[in-house]
View 1 (tube, rainbow, N blue to C red):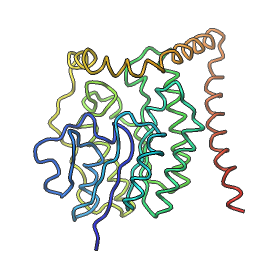
View 2 (cartoon, one colour):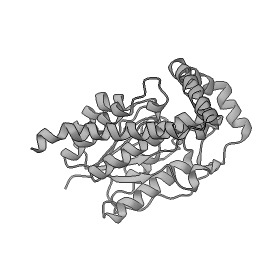
View 3 (spheres, helix red, strand yellow):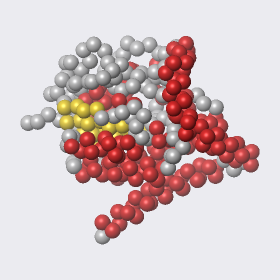
View 4 (cartoon, helix red, strand yellow):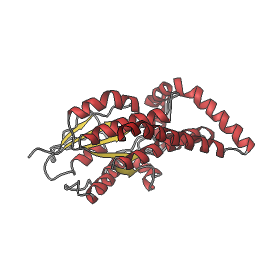
Length: 294
């Protein structure tokens, strides 16, 4: 009997950024972890079965849905996983090219391909980056609206494909600083453990996880104010600069639009516009499926 195969796709969250590999990580369970990060997916892999799991992490920091569809999907399909996680979308919201219709089409392609092979699909909705970074409201609200749109798409497609879906945008862990790393965007060890634990609970309900649940205990302290400032002054400046090149001009335009609508008392129109875009994106997917169904 072959081992369970678990393949993880996505961006830095699934790559494990914020949860550094410690000496001996995964050695008891047979899960092999490469690179400098471990992360929630490796922690979850250790609890999928009593015997060791064949775990492959294809996630790459900075990946968007386009990267997952173009590069990670073919590699993942070749591995023919029993369980596959696809957690991605935040980086799409941080780009000037954001288009929820394209995000929906790519996710539909990825979800359909894996479930068509018979894999059990894991998905998650995520907190919005503007709130996590503590941006001023006029800048945070447009990003939050985009993330809500992505989450709505993920919700709808997860239901369509029978995915195990985790509401990771909710819960006390989102506002608990002990769960997050100094950059405020990536979970720390405690946050990664929470994600693994919550996914394991959902899988156990389906009888799809028979190994021990990941431990919530961790020895990482909550990041201090100086630690966050140090991150911003070193790695953070480069991170912000890379994204500001194409996001900042559009974000300023979005902020100006936000201010105009607030002054006129018509802010709800922005929410309605975003909801309409999500509805149109999902309707477009349904329309392309009708000829096949017939």
